[in-house]
Length: 419
Image (tube, rainbow, N blue to C red; front, side, top):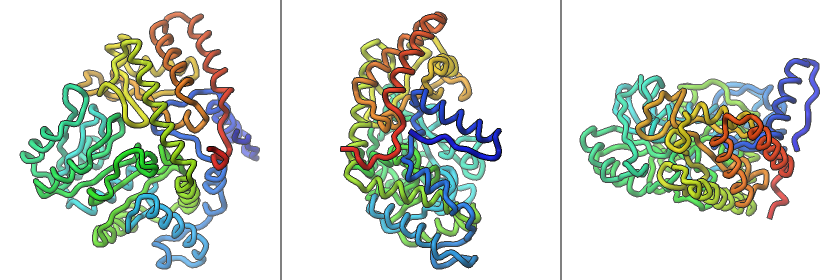
């Protein structure tokens, strides 16, 4: 269990400690979130936040960087070892800035990029019209088919029509395994670069529980706080030296100034944890739990987009299953201490702020020790809540069950003693 903090600034202290209480008392199913170890927490909150140092290890524009150089070098070397890549940049402040730099390194302004649509499970930075990716580039979208699956023949056909400079694969709400080899073949056929955004599945790839894009993608981007269970931030990887030089220049001085060394330290500590045997067990359990969770919903005739899951997440069509919008469903579950996020579904008629679905992820609660049995119990609670959402007494009864479940599995300080 994390510790309460004490500050001279009591208003901020109060807000942080309330958040600590919320995290302990709630069941966390947002697929983008996880619980870092206390080691990661301490490194991220360390005195490294005081140090400024534009540039890269050994090539800084500021003095006094010998210690932060050591930290960043360790983060880079550990990341390269995890994914078996030649070049890595650990400075991106977020997955979005990582994607911005990676795209800029591969495509000229107003060039053509092609990524999955937001409603099918893509990300804002893959070409959505309100994002930099849809404003600085000509963006085109592919969608999943009527079964909620990637149809590689359809994607190839579209790519031949568009002739994009860059194809993006890797998603924020796609629950099936990605065939990176197929994407490489499509990219080669139309003369495009291939970028794999593995923000959600990076930890599964690192543990060998999902196929890797390393052999196929020109550039790989990711966040570090989802299934990698590290400090919040982004990373970029490649095996192409020339591309790596362009990426480094686009991170600094292109999109960012001085690195956040405290965040890089938190990433480095997490990368060390990923390299340990216990992480493979963790990743395996994430997928086992996700399948059990999804299967239990299907027993209640709940509609799962793509019919199931191969990774850490899946999306429920709550509009068709419960006659609720995603926003309504997530608000109902919040009342009983279950945190999810509303999510668009393929061909969604609702806006991204309302949606027709909710996305559920198992990475965070697997970190707290949930097994397949707990996720089956949780599916039953969620199903009951969404069916009986107008019954306040029923919701209060379910909230007590959620609290009991959460209290049985407190947030862990360390993962090193797991077997």
